[in-house]
Structures are given as structure tokens and as C-alpha cells.
Amino acid sequence: MYKFDSRIRYSECDSEGKLAVTSLLNYFQDCSTLQSEDLGIGVKALHKRGTMWVVNSWQIDIIRLPELSERVETGTLPYEVRGFFGKRNFYMKDARGEYLAKADSLWTYISMKTASPERIPQDIIDGYGEDQRLDMDYQGRKISYPKDENAGVVSRDIQVTEYLLDANHHVNNGKYVELAAGHVRESSKAKRIRVEYRKQAFLGEIIRPVIYRSDEKTVVNLTDTEGSPYSVVEFKTASQIAEGAGK
Image 1: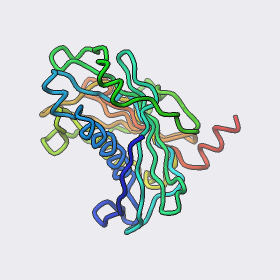
Image 2: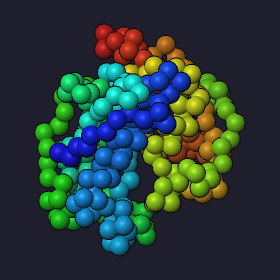
Image 3: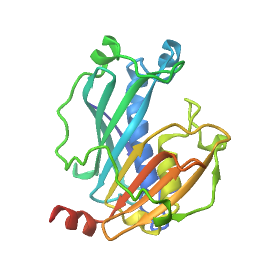
Image 4: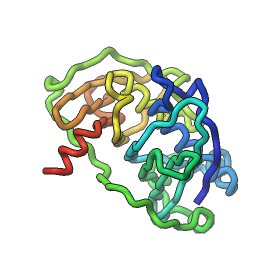
């Protein structure tokens, strides 16, 4: 397990003075990045090997969003690293040690030259080790939505600029959630956010958001101009989660 302490900053808060859901995801991404850097297997080290990690999916369950100036602990637990894939839990706790949020994620180790999966080297497997996974309601990777684009609302196109890119030169994982949340008024009230990544978006490409709303959930499908998804983001409120559990 790896963890770090922090304090919620004004720049990380939403209009209600609470940690924005996109900032929460940034905390989780930063936590795994810092662990990798401290282990000597961070971004630059992997680039020298010609490899990188690409995230396949996120599930973030929110108990309570911390408020401005709250002290928090953020941690990550790699619980299965083998073959081509790495599975990681994340959490955020308040000063009393109570969970504010829990998350699960799936990552693929790939070649930067071929964009194909590569077997994870033993030194990386040994570096991360394996922790006990968190107790949470695991939902799986796939997110369903209507296949008929006409069932959704198509929003204006977004051109990928350098602002959206990360050190791997594609759209940062968290930016997809930020773009999706910008099309969902109730995103700040979401208690479960799931993200499925289908392909990478690069500088100059066009992202076209398509929004699907139902009694069960809100889904934002971030597609290319041909309708092929880059990323699918699902938002559920507490009542929607409860209704789904009762079925």
C-alpha cells in the first residue's frame, strides 16, 4: 500500500466548496503516479523501456466529498499485477480515518511503439507487490448504453488541445471525466462514477459527447466523429444505486 496526506485546496473545490469529483480522480491518479515514481518505475523510467500503463476502467464509489481545508489521506493498493494487467484499489479517508471514497481500476501494460499489450516485467510485479483488495461493490468494466445515437443528445464537438494531454501524449484519463461531467448537471451529486476507456484520443482529434439519460443512470459517450467511443462515463446517484441493488 502507498499513501500520502493532503489538505483540500480551494482550486480543487466545486461551487459548493466541496472536492470536485474530477479532483478526486486526480488525487487517485497522482497517488499511483507517486508510488511508481518512488519505486523507480514511473513515467520516465517506463518511457526508457518503451512502455507505459493505459487505464481500461474506473469505478469510484463516493461516501462523502470532503470540504475545503479538510485534511485527507489518499492511498492505493495494487492487488493483482500479472500477465498484461494491473488491478488497483484507491481510497480517500478523512482525519478520523473514515472512508470518503473507494475506487477500483484496471490497467494494461503496453508497448509505446506498437500500442499492444506487453507482459509485465518481474521487477515491476515485485516492486508493487500485492495487497488485499478493498471491500466494495465491484461492478465490472463494461458500461451499457443505447446503441442508437438518436436515443441520446449530441453535444457540440470538442477539439483535443494540449490542455487535455498528459505525459504520454494522449488525453489524460481524468480529462474524459471532466469533459463528461461538464455535460451532467447532477455530476456533483453522483455517488458512483464508472469509466470505460475504449481508445486513446490524440492532439487535434475531435471528441463528440452523446448524453443518454434514464431513470437508472446518466451516461456520456465521448465518441469520435464516426460514433466510435473514446470513453464511456456513467454517473449514478445514491437513489439510483439503491434501486439497482433492489432489483
